[in-house]
Image (cartoon, rainbow, N blue to C red; front, side, top):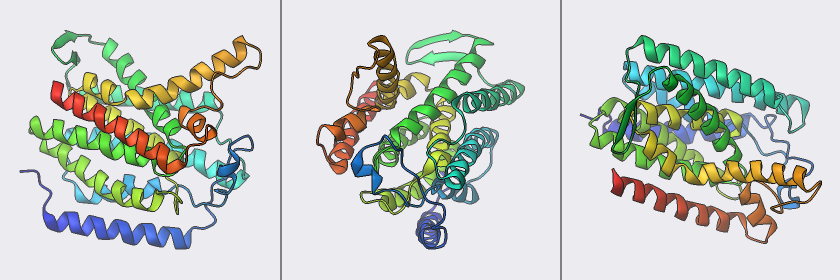
Length: 309
């Protein structure tokens, strides 16, 4: 049994609507400060309430049955979410879109990943790397893999969170792919957790569509990236995760390439702006059109992966 009945679905849906509505009304001081060098169209977003990701990370936890796997997934998600919360809080307090220094964030992310791997080994979990039909026991190297996937994923999701509805919409499609994989594996504990989070995330997406009433903030983006990464590890679906995450990976690569090209050419830009979704905006596309383009690509990636596994 999935362990998630219609009553729970309705209750979580209604509670999500209730808490997001209350949050928007009561926490107007928790407002986003846009980058000074950002797009002019984003300057009007100053004052939009942020840190909405707290709700879709925490509320679903009251609707899932605990298991060893879900405990570890929740630990990783909340660990990265807490880091994002601190980052968001600094932005709100200082009224500058800087937050924690990048070096500090990376160090804390590595520390959290190390703790996750310690408990992963303590529970005698599988250290066999499985990418579709390829399998190899990598033992301690699996720790480096967990570290890399968690850190890279959380930051890729954070970079994707730059347009109203973009990160949340692509995440929902990504999550549908993982839900189908969990169902095929009959891993109903993880399926229940995925379903619970995505019900609340869907309600958030409705609040986050252009023009957004609420941003997820780093608490939501870092937490989501870690959630999908660690869930894929426990589903033994790292290959599927990487392929479904190609759009997020490309977004992160566009930033890396932009910085490298800028330094190499001493001031020239490869893209008008990075990440790439901002380049599309700078080229004249409206936010909703960028959303629809990315949703389409993300949907195709998920369908292709599901057809392969």
